[in-house]
Length: 475
Image (cartoon, rainbow, N blue to C red; front, top):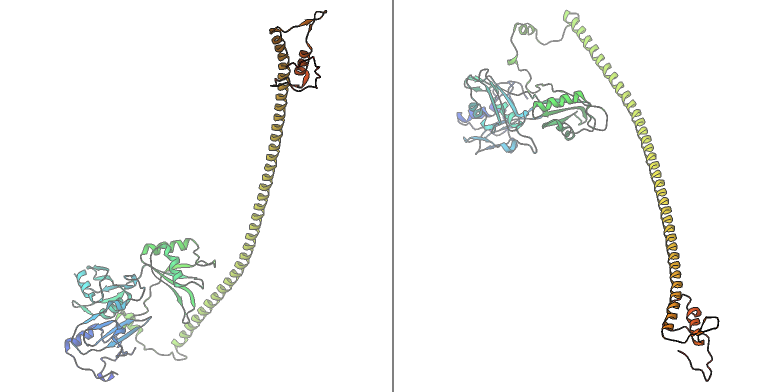
């Protein structure tokens, strides 16, 4: 960036000699890129930059310049063409891979609008930067807001339209304040952008989450979370203030505060400083070093000593805070060790209790099995006794039935023999005398070989009988 030196002469160009175009094309070139930036300083960058890096597509050849916002400064890409064709913007070239569109970061404030300005007129003014998603105009106070697709397009629109004339008035284009942005402090060392966004996404949709690092890429313990709406940011702010929000295993909660909105790009130009009497009084003396021994030198040194004391006190406070943090970390480690020991002891007691319960359950199961076996043995013995008693009873009944049957059969045989008219000899004593064959048959049938007295189909063989020659066998 160079100082304000007025219009740049032609011999300052480091490329080929310029060809003079028509006045209409020259005016169009100035309106697109502009010769000076918003601070009144002339931009001098590489004129031979390629059109593909700028994201512009010239129809034919022409001359134009584009301002693109870098990290914290403007990068000016100046390209020249030599035809009178119109200039267009390739909007796809200004979208980063994975970039979210129509966020709060691409919302612009437009001030000093003429009275009666309509939304259609503002949309037409920003038409070359894509289709906006939000347009709000306060016709009474002469300001409005417009939201473009990406942050890069908003940067270009701001660079080109700021301090330009619109219906006879010089409008102001600034980035709108992000009301849903929060500052996060005390971040653990191993928190990344993705983890930060994932952690705070529970409160609402997030547009951007950044962990701030130093020039070496080391985390500073601070971050920025930008929500899509204010209710989500208020919810996160209240929840983190009431509770302890932890992002990792390290038990140190993060601190969430509203983001302080600062303008580190534009600053305070001279034309925006209020020209009141105090301003003229302060500007009476130019920048200088105070002369030793003078009044201003004495009080300047006193101010310097006061600021040095303030610095020392801040450093002492920082040291005290650091010592307190180290002490708290040591106590935390000791307490964590004790807590782990206590948890292990509790786990051991729990396991012992479970083991005791398992042993009791096993003993109860063994006792139940023994009792069941005893009951089964008693039941088996009872059934054997019942079976033995039943068997004895059947045997007694069978024996009783056999004796009665023998007596009855003997009576029947006697009656049968008497009915057939068989000779029955009576002895002198009045008894019946049976023949020898009948006596043998009775003896064989009654007491012979059938102890049970049951009827048999054939008589059991008895002892051999000697039949004489004059005796015949009786069947």
